[in-house]
Length: 489
Image 1 (cartoon, one colour):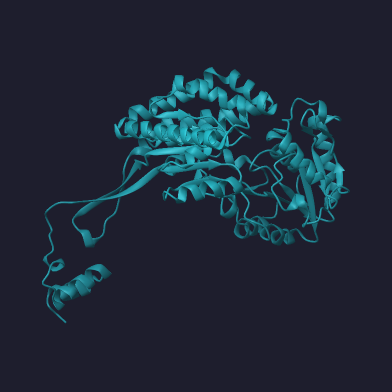
Image 2: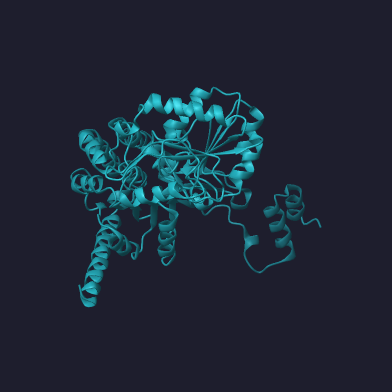
């Protein structure tokens, strides 16, 4: 293709993106997305889509990731259904202006915080949970009354194609659009002016999204990731702890999850027991030959397989494997792998793993783990297994992370009354439940006054007497106000 043809193609993509945004802005300007009736009808249709096409969704997730049906239903479809049901149930309450107190300064008056839609929003989704991470933000955007463009990940083509093909039959196509494509299409979309951009994915692309948004002063929600630690104390129910770690790691898309445990920290004394119990439970869950199990997702593609293989082949860790490590490049499979006492400066400890590899670091005292965690960037999640209340309190107080779970992993994501989002390098902004509605709303401050109670002292000509009254009024000094009104110095 010649340079001219390339430029023409790029211009066409930008033009198409601008036309899509123009159509959505016209739809939003008509006011229809603001109505309770429209919002509920769209949420009900999205719920219907997830019910009617459950088998199609499972098939797409199997095609993209070899995702087990149970994980597809429980971790993606059921969570989306719950989001839809909650939004439908609570929408009138969420939309109702919140009355707030006013002060004597504005007496007589009343005030309210009025939630209003932002306008036209862009949602760029991730490949690892391509159904849930695409449509869960859409629930919040629709509930808040916005027009939406959804850009699914091209790395999960079957799920992307399914949503592009079917969502238009359930949702209002003049206000909700699915745009497929790869880097060029995403770049064309990012050139447009949006009222909010919601991105789920890597920190590297998150920086690109934020830079593009900055050109238009567009606010962003960035759902990123990081190295989520698991600190394991002694004197715990070790079997339950290991099961919950395994469930959060390999039971969540074979480690390809933003809140999957990335590494474990335990004491040197306790590490052998922990490793042995993890081995026993892994064999119980996935058999003696995990390559044959149907209960593990595969690595998403050859590029990610090569990336994970590079982590394993690093000279600093290749001799640290104590369980697993088998690979099949043709099937894109890597068995659950445990590595003990890996150096903190190894490649596997300097980037998010996002796969079935689990390093175990050891320290002299469990309290020493806090320094290890805090020496890195702030993770999306942090986990602690202990029966020690003082340690729990210290962990919550000292570890900065998007979310924390004590004596479990990943389940905080399912609690709709908790915000889900990162901090620092793991992201900004949050969603889930009402937090999703708030993420796509502007909280407008409104003050109501009548023509009564007009105060002459606020108007010129300014005098010392007026100044005394206003100082007392603004300072909340009742006696000072009385003295000023009576003319006492």
